[in-house]
Amino acid sequence: MANQWDNINLLKFAQIRAVFADEKKDATDRMVALAAILEGTDEETISRMPLQEVQPVFARAWELNTPPQRNRVRRRYNVGAWTLRVTQPKELNVAQWLDFQNYMRGGVEENMANLLSVALIPEGKSYNDGYNIEELKAALRQDLAITDALAVCFFFQKRYLHSMRSILNRLVGWIVLARIKDRKAKRAAIAKALKTKAEISALMRSL
Image (cartoon, helix red, strand yellow):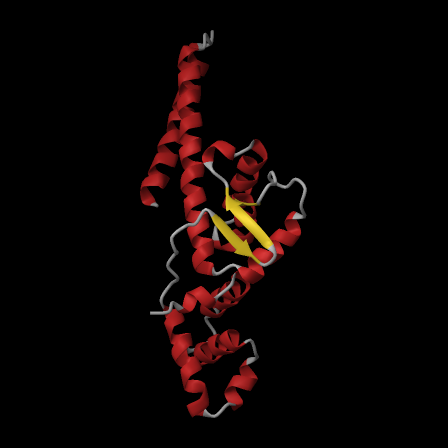
């Protein structure tokens, strides 16, 4: 059975989220707005369509009441003119690590294209080197299905968190072994590192 969400790119997904977030719209208004998004037109045009003609569109719009499910992640994605590969843990560099952290603070759904631009790198390139990353983000918004976007974000997030836990394990070990003269400062540093490690582990279990 076809998944309606497979036909929704990131731009349309943002529009759909805005419709559901609009508390002023009742169920009928919401259905018309969703139908307009699916058809790539405006609500007035949908309102003027014969009911019999618009019913199949309403049926597809109704399916959007069920949240999108992620597809299985693939190694490579063809997005517009781009061939993109998913960054593997050993390939993660400092710039990606920092950018991913910054984008995550704003929320996954709000920063989907930004997060994907960190995780998906053009074939034969390094992160943000030798290509226009803003053009890549535009292509991701236009040509990547939300079901694939969620798959990549989930996969990369898990790998990122695993990397963070590994780094923290080494950090805790280093602090324990380091000869910090101030024992109080040493205990505080260990406690802070352990707390952060516990928070990340809890987040990983929730995914």
